[in-house]
Image (tube, rainbow, N blue to C red; front, side, top):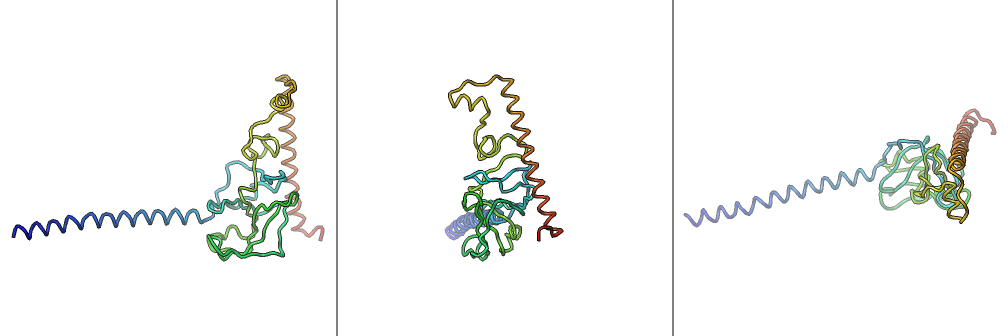
Length: 220
C-alpha cells in the first residue's frame, strides 16, 4: 500500500507543472497575436503639431498633415488624403500578393520633381487597411517632415530629416568666414522664420483654392 501511494503522488507531481506550462504558453501566444494584429492596423492618431511633408531626395513639398489620414507601423507609411507635386502611375496598377497588403490593388506614387518612388495610392484594400484607400501613402524612408512654422525646413536642418540646426553663424564657421554678430544673427534668423511661415501659409491657401475650384468646376 505504501508503494502504491508513493506512485500516485509521483504521478500527481508530474502532472501539475505540465498544466501550468501549457497555460503560460497559451497566454504568451494570445499576447503575441494581439501585438501582431495591432501592428497590422491603421493608426488614425494625428501628430500633435502640423507637419510639412516633403521628398527626402529633392526637398519638394508634397503636402501637410492637415490632410492626415493615418499611419501604419508594419508598412512604415504615412497616409494623406491630398498631395501635390506627385505623379501617380494610373496605367500601371499592381496587386499585392503577400503580407498585410495581400489582395490590395495600388498605383505607385513618384515625386514629380526628381522621379523618386515615394509611396503608393491604394484603389482597393483589405478590411484592416480601409483608411488607406484613395489616399497617398508615403513611405517613411522616402519622405522628411518639419513642424509648420519652424525654421527646420528642407535643406535648413532642425526637424527636417533629422538634420542638425544650421543657422547663419554655423554656416559662416563651416565656410571659414567670420561669424556675424549676435544681433545680426538673431535678425537674420527672425527674417528666415517669417519667410518660412509665409511660404507655408501660401502652400496651405493654394491647396484650399484648388479644392474650391475643383468643387465649383472652375477650369473644366
